[in-house]
Image (cartoon, rainbow, N blue to C red):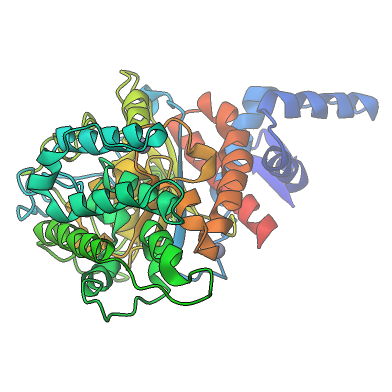
Length: 490
Ligand SMILES: [Zn+2]
Ligand SMILES: [Zn+2]
């Protein structure tokens, strides 16, 4: 076919498609493509020379605007609501002056947005297992001091006073000694309890009743607990059999600390879970697209938008781009998140969601990269049911952010950091890492490979080209890229 542009240029579809195929296969700027075409023309002795780069750019975008490559951005294997989602953002800083007033990322709120006042910064305090940083530091010190010389030289009475069950378990760890088959398992569990992250990272909602039942000495712990709370699974498994292959009863201290963990996680959850997610709104034919055409809104997901982001006026700084702080004031937060997002260059970019089969499930352009809010809002506004696992570089921060705002919606979601992004999270609990959950969950093992594939093959390839483009071109170019990407995988 032929594409007639302004009656001044006529292009073969082949040439335009050839560019699409080139830039989606490997990084190909417009200039490089036009240079190759010009040389080809000369080699073949064509009388006319190939058009200028500017003209080609204009023609290609006019052409692609009319195309509906329509990969539909849905994974045939995962279906409409994938259970594992990988979120990956890239900052690009498209020319801000070219941003239109139509841009509507999922983070958008207006004066008409629903206001949720059942959650407040006051309710959202004390989210970690050990509420105060001083006591968390004391437990960390205790673990450090027992690393080499196995004697406790610290005064741990403040922990004993505040958390007696935890303290008794610490003493069990100390008395079993370093040669004990339970040494590493106990140590890991204690270290995860000392994490500054929200308690529900270590003990997800589903695990609460099981941990609570563990206080009953006759309760037989189901094996699948280990995939929900790997650290507790390790500890229990270290008792499953002795050298003669006989079952060893679990120590009372371990049962008691499980009960305490259940109470803490339940307390955090019930304080946050004050409201249901907004009901699903399906837009009828008459007001179809009231959220707008993706070419203008810059938001393009395979799933239709079914909710709008709510406003949480009683949470400090909610929805403002300066909302970089941890939900809990007593928490110093993730070093990596803070150093990435506290920089004054609040560049915009693209947020992309993938499934584990490396299918792009959609993307949105971010006028200002907001990190957690971009992932939270994209999922909440498009997914009827929250995914079981969300993989994200800053999962440590995303967990508390999402659970504080929509605890009921996200209660069965686990927030994990993949291996590619694991570095830099020095203070963050092990429960945040995919590597921690991997031992017992096969799906999590698949995550690391697919996350790396999407990250390296996907956004990196178009990053440079897009950084020179206007906003509207960025959206079209990105969509064309992902459509071809998805078709090549499906
Ligand atoms: Zn899939
Ligand atoms: Zn972190």
